[in-house]
Image (cartoon, rainbow, N blue to C red; front, side, top):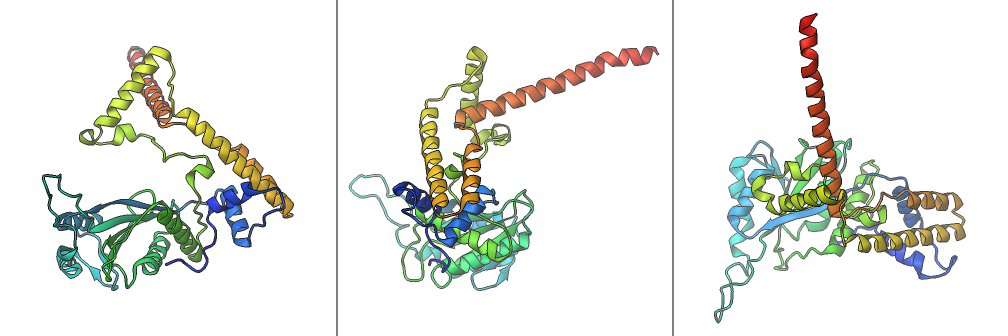
Length: 338
């Protein structure tokens, strides 16, 4: 279901701006508002699919996790608030064991088919200091718009982390037997709709592609040092490789940088097209804001370069701490001699 407000996405704005000479396009009021929110760096919503379960036991484990082992009540699509004891009853009511495709077997010596998902795990989030109750209200409205009378779902609000967020569990198979398919276009639409619902709660919220804001991926800050060792073998190997390269050359190179630079040039061209179209439309001040925004995008950084920067920052902090300890140790004999 598409919310009534929704029009062209931000990617459509970019493509329209590059499509023809100045004056050949006219941005709608809704598109102008989105451009304005973006250049003013309005907080961005997050809608992320964090996985899903292919076994009933895994669904039960996830419900236990998002309820913090029963400390938090889970709200269902029927408006019920259930505690830890009622979670098993909820699973029985969802009839996950009747979902077709999960019992398929291998044929003619071929590997067994990939198991189908029974549920999708989704997170809807806003940066602090967004009031958590408004995030919950927008998330409940989002779930009703997208899944009510089609897919069973349950949700719970988390406030113990930096960003207030809602965990949403959706049964993959709908009442009509059709399965929920989530692709990039779906996620883009969901972000736009969730941002609209946050604004309906009186919270400034935006939904634009990360690349249009000059960002390729989320921050890797401290990721190396917070990841559990049992799950970080690949990441630890990358960090070791980067550390070795830094010790030998003092810098880090990455072949992926050329691709990111090419993408950045396309983004800048897109923003210039937007500014030119706004000029032709009489939005002179906003066109200037667009150009200023484009000129001050974050510098291009690859994953390797970000990891290298984080590693260097951690090493400098450790050395500074060690230096302070040594200074304190040297001062102690002097104090005692006085």
